[in-house]
Image 1 (tube, rainbow, N blue to C red):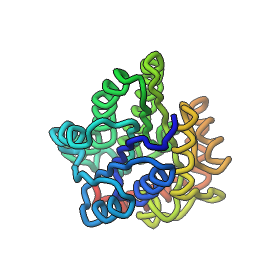
Image 2 (cartoon, helix red, strand yellow; image 1 turned 60 degrees about the horizontal axis):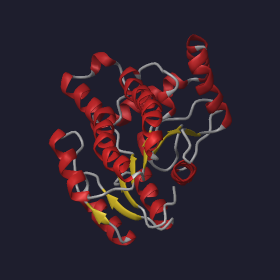
Image 3 (cartoon, rainbow, N blue to C red; image 1 turned 45 degrees about the horizontal axis):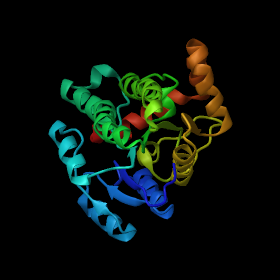
Image 4 (tube, rainbow, N blue to C red; image 1 turned 180 degrees about the vertical axis):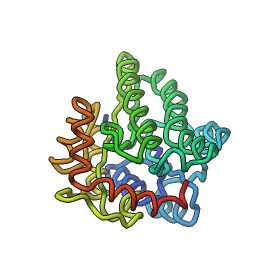
Length: 263
């Protein structure tokens, strides 16, 4: 799909990766509509990019239809908003579990349903979900986060087939550890041994490529992480042992400590 002149809604636009996505879409000639909770970041960014800002909290179920009504007809949905949900399940309250499920899984599904119906009627549009390699490989202390990201992957792959006859594309982007912005960078966690990072601009380039070429899935990670993700589906027990060996559990522990206040 050609992004020039397309109306693109980016959720989670106030985070570092969301800002990079918004800037990347605008650079391709798109009309951007940005949403997030922090108006102090959202409004100046929208003004800078010549777009619109619509504040919304996607944990509020009523806010989703209000957001989409205010946004109007959307050509591309970039579902980027997500909450950190690492940590032992026993340490989460019921309310925190509901909030993670609502933002990370329910909101993208509902937004895809409501925008996808209009796209299908027009026979034009693209739905893209910013997921994580945690949607391909399970990790210790990540059961809730893995659940939401595995869920998005299965949803997107099936929806892609359902939307194919209507000329609407569906893509999922799977970042690994991202430097400078995002959940990993914000936590201050150390990298596992021998593992590298990618940047928010890499995520943006992958997302643009997925939309313009209607790619089902794109990984944004060094080769070794992509191989671990591939192995995760075929040999999960072996993959868990590899993760323990490289010290991924220590990284996750720091992620939990650094993200706890965002639940």
